[in-house]
Amino acid sequence: MLLQRREEQALRETEQQYGALCRSAALDILGNAQDAEECLNDALLTVWNSIPPAEPENYPAFLLKIVRNAALDRLRSRQRGKRGGGQQDAPLEELAGMLSGSEDVEQQVERREMLEAVTRFLETLPKKQRDLFLRRYWRFSSAADLARDFDMTENHVQVMLSRIRSRLRKALRKEGLL
Image (cartoon, rainbow, N blue to C red; front, top):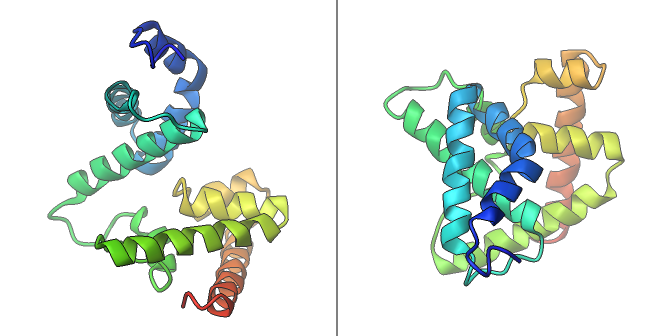
């Protein structure tokens, strides 16, 4: 891998191959193309500083996670001092009862177990439901955007997401995680 050898060409190739996907993910969260571009640049710098020693098994997922985290950090920074108002807060509030953001070691282990359980649950869903769920809670797409992209009404999107959350809650209870 070019990054392991510290060759700058790796960043150009990463931007060429994954730049559109990363910008799109950041744009979904931030709603601003300039901020999305800055998130991509921040992510490329983070990748450059992380590899080596990091050796991600799934480089695109590794990169996308860094972009997503950069976008969320930028969103939090932008919204600091504001109360409510952000549509991006809604997806997190919908899942708030199940997912925590605490940082001590025991809670990190619990969080990892929770994420693994959520991943297993998502694998049981039909593709359309899984895609809908991921677009809403990973990329923070609005109900209106989901309705348009999935050729559904906003109400149908909300009902489907509510049912998926309910099934997720039951699955997490069954595994003793709630």
